[in-house]
Length: 583
Image (tube, rainbow, N blue to C red; front, side, top):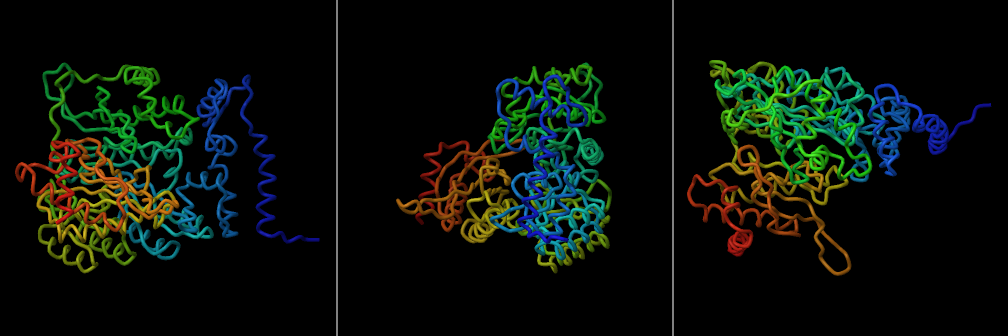
């Protein structure tokens, strides 16, 4: 006799039988040494427990069942169109799938795109996936990456496998893993770059994809390669940043281009990657990064998610002890940078990600396309792919500024390409405010966000273009929560979502805390809070008042906003802005 179970009954039985399976995978007894690719992770967990510590739920979930061993259950859930329970919601992030309820009853898929480079035909394929399996749009992210959103559970497996059919990946793009490897967007075509980052980002990418022991870290981990080109990769906001530097002759080491190693960047925790005092030959970068990861695997915090990033190991140990542990795993000493050996790095151009710019190849150009806060429709995506195919070199480059570049455009084709871009409703020339505007997904698609950042960012740009036009680059970053996906601490003006109280009964509305004076690259620094609990409806006027205060009180036209904001104390800045707001 056959029995038809309800969905709830199936899920109960599934969980019941999984419990027996979990018991069979209980932590090894002290006398048993863990084996296999996950051994180092299990040993780190065991040491914590032996010291009387308590593993986080995420660490227990990883121990009970590795996500890569659970694909069959993801397939079954897709067939049932069933949402995941918390443990599986965490596990499926190993495949790049994030279930974002209650904001949306659907998955978001995040990709892995090394150095942010896609081919025209891959771009068309992503447009098809967004249209047929997602919500009908793509988001370009602040890690030069792409998200497909509003994927119903029944389509989760189809979209993961279809991405792989395109020669792209989502494996390890979420949860406690090394995220998308970023690099200089203009790598290989930039006239001022010291090194082409593409082969190193690609090598790091494939190294991670093919080594299971590098999955299941204490927390997420970011790696970036910056080749010293015109457009930065924000490598100093990463856990590991490889910064291309030139070493002239006369310093006791072979002259040439090296990567300077920077460690511990996490601007959401108010820290940039700091110079480790080490030079890495480019061909050794992947090996060095691998050993850094393994030291982190063994020593990262698995009891406190808030302190489980590389920064906190460095804070506790200091750089000298940490680098000694890395060298022990390497089996050799790393090359120390003699004082004064590193030549000044070329300065970035904060406007080079928008408009047409000459490449190092004679007669060729890249064109930076402004996207509306990183959002693309399938029609726009296909149109840009066709422009890249017909008028460029066939490739598109995503940037950390939520826009993209079309490379390899001939001098004679620039006007045609721009005309075609504008016909898609996109632009290659925008105001400084709109060019430097960055926003995370916000409450539209993230349950952590306290405000609708993308919508509010658009309103800020519209208002400021009319009421506070700028004649110099300006970066305004809106992030919805403390995770700081849009890195509000590094913006000239930064906004972080907040629930603003409106009465004594506990009612609140969407709003922001507003910060000023953040910077990156040559002007790296953490922004300071100037206004708290500003209702979202007032933020365009407040931001405009800050921009007008800068424009009216700067020393001269060469003084940047960040220099202005750091020159004055907060009380003075607040007074200037409030005077402008009252007008």
